[in-house]
Length: 113
Image 1 (tube, rainbow, N blue to C red):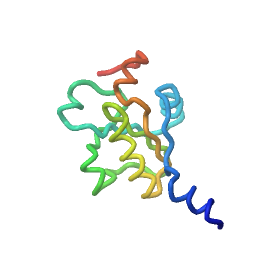
Image 2: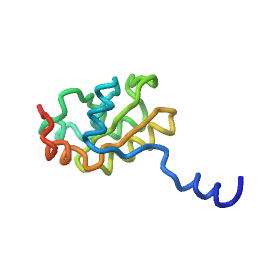
Image 3: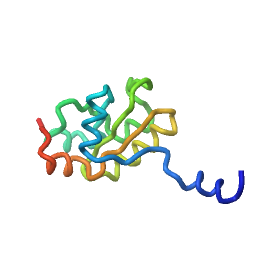
């Protein structure tokens, strides 16, 4: 492996950032959606199919998230979900982060409960 390939690998992200539409498509195919926001944020509204796994808890436990399915992380704006997706990818998950988080989810007109 040459220097350029090594640098690309070192600086590439091990997860994909996806749109709300792409997340919905993956969810339709059996992906798991985890919301990594705080409990207070979770109570303000969430995607109906989301499982609540705060980011700080995800650092020590994957809380029974199956490795056999893609895992999509969502937060308020996309920053914490990117961290979550990076952690999950490092643990061997097929991980994704929703670009724009729950703000984008709401803006796309997707249901929130």
